[in-house]
Length: 132
Image (cartoon, rainbow, N blue to C red):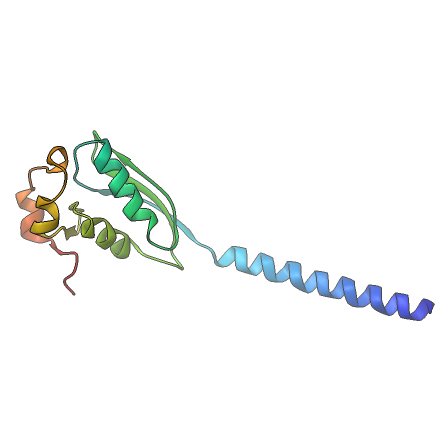
């Protein structure tokens, strides 16, 4: 009986040791990237739309868009997503980013206060969010 308790205790402790070491390895694999990207917009409704679009991407942990600076500050898990995927999601809802453009129809259908003048430099160098 005493031997059975000792064997059970050793087994349980071994299990815990293996479990905790696995958790530590998983925590090291989770790399969080912090970036700032330019996203065009005008108002509080734009802010809500831009941040909501960023949060639809799996792996985004934090998204905050500054209305005055036109900058989106992001934290995301690089093992789950990347900057391109996040920018495509934002452009898909109607807002131009550093690297991707919203299509004309989506941009034109934004609320009237949200329709911003398109930046000619971005129009020249960027591609549409749905282009490969």
